[in-house]
Length: 78
Image 1 (cartoon, one colour):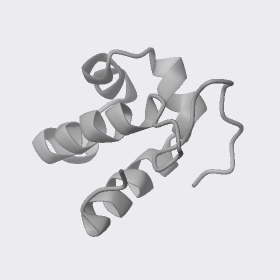
Image 2: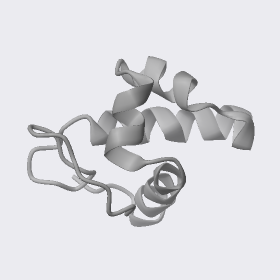
Image 3: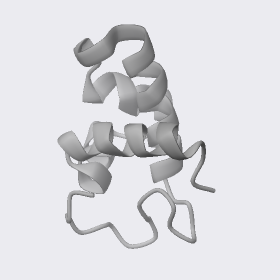
Image 4: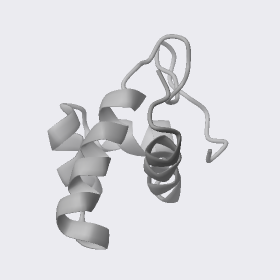
């Protein structure tokens, strides 16, 4: 994880509340599968129905790819 603070009422993937993180990871997985590293934060945010600022707040930039890989390797984090 990126170590960035998380907004109140949200959590990182695997957190006990789920928060927007799980939807962001799923949207990012789809975007990376379709477009590889050409996928954008804006594209992920639109697919997850959150703002680009929310994606960056919850994950930063590089940590989003890390989270997608972690979920893919683990199968699921719910």
